[in-house]
Length: 106
Image (tube, rainbow, N blue to C red; front, side, top):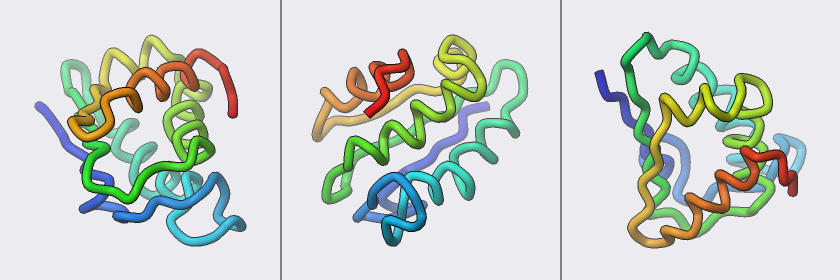
């Protein structure tokens, strides 16, 4: 089964910074409320498509906290076996996210 998260529609068109204490729509909030629960609910063979388009942009700390954090907690290879990213507007974001998953923390 393929599941989808559209960050603009499911979370915010204006994602914030790393922590909840930094303001609204933080990476920490997205991780705790949407990304991690959806990830851990995936069964064998399931896939999660994450659409990064239609937002006002991303703080690097948001991307590191969410996707880098997921990889640090569950292992990069495990995460990349289940998650694929879509970014037509800013395709470089996908490689940036993968660098955070490699441990290049921002």
